[in-house]
Each structure stands twice: as structure tokens, then as C-alpha cells.
Image: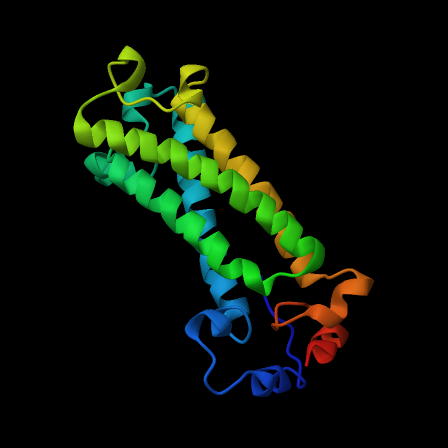
Length: 201
């Protein structure tokens, strides 16, 4: 996500109270940069999942050996349920914290991603609990989440990441290119349309 240079943008910053909280700044003057950083992290994680799928389906690697790119050097790290839960939690917090900066249709789609990610985080919490307590549910030999009872783990988490990512992208699209009736409600500089940025001020 990139910004279009606009001389009217500084007036948005001036409208923010001098004693604005960190959270308020994240959802106004810093929203664009915070969203860029967050989406970079999301895309990097996506790349790991896609590379793992490539290792399995194209290279023919056995699933226990297909650990993505980072797993080539740190297989123990990729096998850590703490890492996976930590990322799911970061995703949940990131979507929640940046949600206030979205308005209208953009916020609706961003909220859809938040709800799905909440369940995804629950699934990872169940896996972390089992790995930590060494008590696997449903008599399984390894930690197992609810939907993993029906779908293999690699495909399931590709699916989870897809159904979280798609509404996020739609939300970002509507945030950057707001519909006509929503242009006056912008609180940040994310929109590419210079007219909408000017109206936000």
C-alpha cells in the first residue's frame, strides 16, 4: 500500500489533539505506515505457508520435512506451537488495533477478518495448550485442533490464512479507494484519492 503525495495531508495531523494517545495516533496520522508494516508481516507469513505447500506439492517432500523457508535453517522453531500461537495472537491484535482507522465498507470487511482470526487464534491456542501440557485431545498422537479432525494441518491453515487475508484485502481496498458516500469519514492518509484526503482534513 502506498500513498499519493498530497499537500493537504498535514492538516489532518493538525486536527489531532496534542495529547492524543498512541492508539489514536495509530488510527489517524500513523495509520498508513502502521498498516503498511502490518501487511508486510502478513505477506511474509503468507509466503512461508505458500513455500511449505510448494515443498509438499511440487518438490514432493514428506510433510514432516516441509517446514517452509525459515524451517530450512530452524526446523525446531517452525515446529514450535508457541511461535504459531504467537503469530496468530499478533494477527488478532493487529487487526483489532488498526480497526478504528477503517470506516464504512472497509471497516465491515476488516471486522469479518477479525472474527475469523479470533477463531483461528482459538485453534492455535488449543494446539499450544496440548503441546504445553503434553495432553493431546481426542486421543491423537500429536496436538490437534478442532477442524484438524477433518482436514490435514497444512491445508487447514492455508485455508484459515486465506479466509482471513481475503476480507483484509477487500477492507484495505475500500479504505484506499472509499466509495463516494464514505469519503468524508476518513481519519487518516491511506486513501489514494487526493480529494478524499482533503475532505478528511
